[in-house]
Length: 212
Image (tube, rainbow, N blue to C red; front, side, top):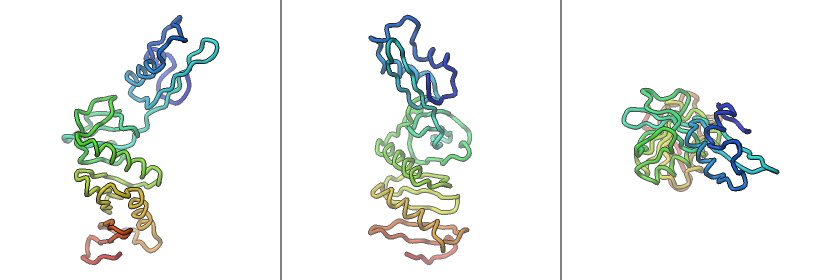
C-alpha cells in the first residue's frame, strides 16, 4: 500500500476485497480499484498493479476539497474530480469557492456531482482547472446559472463576467492580470466585463464610467 489517504493499510485492504490466498494473476485489478473508490470516500484515485512474483500493489491518492456546490439551499463539498466528499451542509465549507447554478442531478455521497445540463459539468471542470493552473486565489463564487453569462466573484467585491466558455482560460488570465496590475486600485469594487476581441470593460460600483 502506498500513496496518500487518511486510512490505515488494514482499511484499504478490507475495502479492496482482496484476501490472503487469492490468485493475484487472475485478479481483476480494475474491480479492486473500483472497490476501494466505492467504499472509501476520501480516496480520489486508485492504481492497482501486480508485482513479481506474487505481489499486489495498491497506490491511493487522497481527495482534496476543491469547491462547494449549492443545491436546494444545501451545500455539497466536491473534490477536483467532482466527487462528493461532504453532503447536506447548512453552510458552505470555508475557504472554498461556492458554485451556484450547477443544477445537480440527485447528488449522492461518494459519487461524482453531475449537472442536469451536461455542458455545465464541462464548464465547472474547465473553470476549476483554469483557476488552479493560474493560481488565481480569492475566487469566492462561481456562477454558471447561465452558460452564456459565466461569472466569477473575486474577493467578494469584483464580478468577473466571462460570458460564454469560449476562450475561458484566456479571459480568466486577462481578468487576473487586470486585478493584479500595478495601477489597479487595491480596494476596487465593481465589474470586469470580458469583451470580444480581447478587450475588457472595468466598471466601478459607485461609478457609471468604464475603461477598456
